[in-house]
Image 1 (tube, helix red, strand yellow):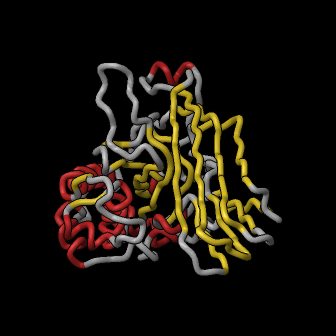
Image 2: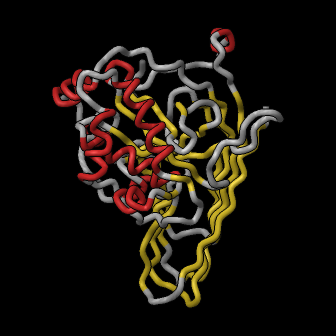
Length: 311
C-alpha cells in the first residue's frame, strides 16, 4: 500500500497471472467555449490532467489552449486534483481546450479487508492525518453532496455498524444502481442528491452523489471520482453504461485497504475500463472546466471525448 491509501499495483507478469488485465488507452478530450459578445478578465480552472493514481501510468500528455492565455499555472490540490489556472487579459470570444494522453492501467486486486463499518468509523475518527490522502476531508457534507435524512434512512439497513465495510459498500452500490435509473439529460451539474433520489433518475454524477451522501450520513468517508470510461468493449462483452464524456464513480475509505472504488452506474468495482483523472468531495471539486469573467452574455459549451484502446 502506498501513501495514497490505495493498494499499489504494477504491470508485471504476476498481474497477468492473477487475472488482472493491463490495458492501454489513448484519451482525447476537446472543449469549446464561445460567447455571443466578448468577455473581459476571463479566468478558468482546467482539471483535465490525470492525478497520479496507483495502477495508472500516463505518457504523451498534452494540454493545448487556443488562444494562448496571458498566464497558465499548474497547481496540485487541494484534493487529488491537478488544476491549470489560466487567465486572459484581452477580450475573449472563444476558447478551445484540447487534452490528450496515453494511459496504461492495471487495476488493483479485489479488496481483502475484514474490517467492519464500526472499525472504519473509529479508525477514521482517530486519524490525525489531514493531508489530501486522508479520510478526514471526505467525512462531512460538501457543497453539492449534502446530507439528506431520506437518503440516510434508506441506506441505514445496509450500513449497520457490525457489517463488513466492503460487503456493505457492494450492497449500497447495487441499491443505488436500482434506485436511481440512468437517464441521460435528466439532471444538471447542479442537481443535489436529494432531488435525484426523489425523482429516481439521473446520470452517473447523481448516482455517485447519492451514494456519497448515504455513506457520509453514516460516518463513512466517501469521495467523488472523475475520469473516463471505456464504453466500447471487445465483441461479445457487455457495453458499460455512461456518457461518451467524463464518467463519475465513488471511492469508499475501507480502513486497512484504503480507498476502494465502486461504480454505481454499472453496479461493480472499477477496473481497467475506468481511467481516473481526479478525486474530490463532489463534482464541484473536479469539474473539467469552470471560471469567471466580466460581462453579460450567453455562453455556449460543446465537447467531444474519444477513449480508444491502443494496445
